[in-house]
Image (cartoon, rainbow, N blue to C red; front, side):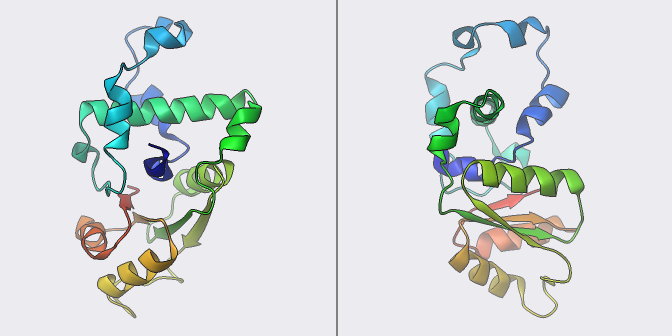
Length: 177
């Protein structure tokens, strides 16, 4: 289940509260069991292992809810300074290559912070580090990054570029736009 947590940026709970706000704030105060997604949530999240995420439309409702629940649970554990949260480190020995043609402070900081808190390492690759399709083809970039990273995250100008990266990579690719 936590293999796919690698592609959960640390800011997904912000996404949930901004775009998927429950009808009432009572949701936030309800006991965890009352908010639980049910027995299908674990299956929904585990179904994402090894998959790329190119569009939010690629996720079923159950998968999206499962990702948001897992993200919120991890964030709450770290905010509570839960000793068990630090001991879990589900992304230990995992590395994320973050390709940024398009800069974003929030995306970079939240992803690097999330990776570090979960025990992984994020590698920032700006426009000067990787010139997609200029010095190396997208295919070559995908192959090289796949050899050294657990996931490739791309914030690029064209959706066709992230689609090609995903087609050529042997690790999951996440569209960070």
